[in-house]
Image (cartoon, rainbow, N blue to C red; front, side, top):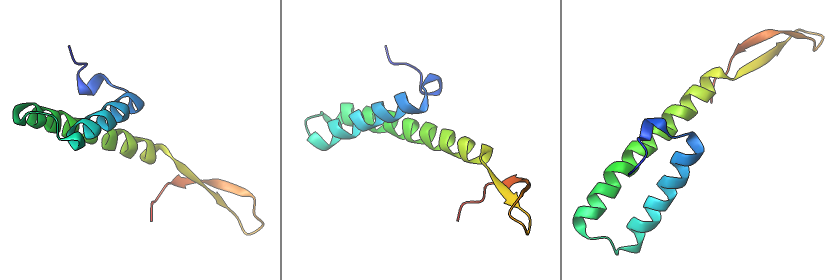
Length: 79
């Protein structure tokens, strides 16, 4: 029985996603199996993305004043 995607840690979801990609790339899966793998892989991809987005939102950058001393924090902005 497969573990529900929402119960997987980021690392476990990524490992399973890598395994699914490998199986799909082999070309050995019958069509129905490949479709099921693709659907689970897409759910795993979204799980990983959501976990990364949540982690990024928690990261804070340290602001410094003119003398280089820590003056507080601000949310991380990618870019």
